[in-house]
Length: 253
Image (cartoon, rainbow, N blue to C red; front, top):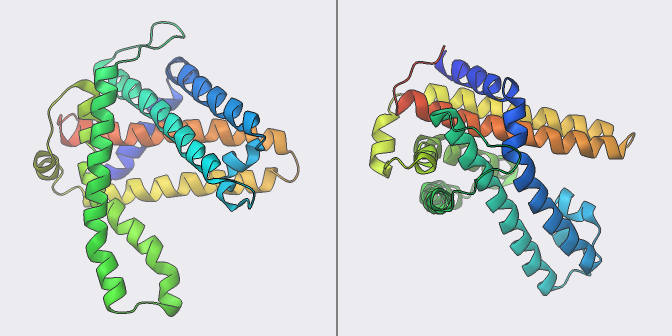
């Protein structure tokens, strides 16, 4: 099955290149974490509220703090984009990091951010018909509990066909919306497998963190950070391999 081959290949890309993973990801993530932690500490906000996503639930958090939280989240996204661009270029172009200070290809990063914004717009356009159906037919009650997961799944299913625009932006290759859609025709089976495996990885890490956190909170946090790094790069590798197979027409063993 092509989806499983792409997933397996993506996992191997990460596990067989762990040194490259660290050389690409360590500095961007360390800088982002340092800025975020320093800002939160300066505000007197416990770090666990940012890490757990519960910051907005605190009654004493002001609007100013929430604005800062959004700004810090933007820094985290930029760090992710930096890592993603370098990883795409490593896999597709063989461009290796020179030492522990990875280059910052600002033109490719800006192009990548532009594609992310375009994908966000496409996600909204895909979601509108589904939301309309849910509202029009009053699908509340027991089904309402499942409406959000169904919405996310359907959006992800169709949006994945446009994901090759991200690796293309990273390596400077032109790839428009219609081109991406045409080139990935017949890939829905592979997409289903990739989405399913991505979900399994994230759920497994979440369960592991849930089990370890009450017993060894510090160790659980380390496992969570490293696990998210590896899983994040596997997700990026899946998009890269998907691009390589359907756009570049390279075979995946």
